[in-house]
Length: 295
Image 1 (cartoon, rainbow, N blue to C red):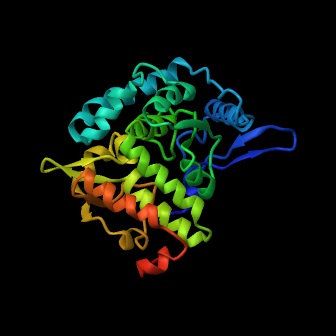
Image 2: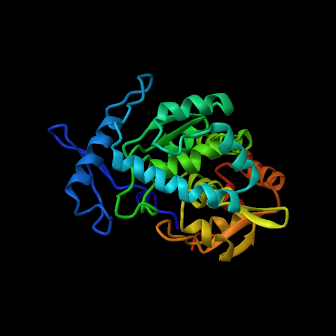
């Protein structure tokens, strides 16, 4: 079962105006005071931003750029081997730098030309309705911090590497961007939490952890797989099932671990037809139509 609070470490503002990111005790940066201070400063920049103002630029350190370079280098080869062609073409069209962390306004400039999407800064957790609803307005809420240097190839929560290398490249595809926008319009349309949760669950197993068949090979398009150095090597060995929305909204899943069950579309055309229709027709009666209680 998806738990919204698992996505990010909570961020709060104190009475004195100070901003704090509350890392869990098992977070690799929990005992690193310098890292915690850095996270607080980056979160404060996003929390102080207002729509219409320039997106805050982060003065990334050499160490943070090095983490970006390490991940980009490792994923470059793996994308060629495991990513679907649409993602690879979109990645080439967007042309993100691999030697440094790009600023969110740079990502927006590229995406606006390709799919009309823009990136807005987020200090941490964005509520489900706001996050998904914004996709309907072609806005993607993104964190700006970089994962802890002790584990450059892993993060327990979405950082700028996941948000940009995974979702940014995916949003550079007009076809995938249209699916995300349709999910956002669905989130704007529904009123019940159950219907919103169903949309989020299907989004999780498609846009985050989706796979499809391409030239008789199973390839990934989900941002969660394509931004994960480890999971991208393992996804073909998981329990691969055909697209099944009723199953997606009833199965338990833990976002902090590799996903043991994945749902494969027969092709990108099949994905667009099935998932696009699901989002386009989702309403408050969707959970009842799917006919399965959450387990």
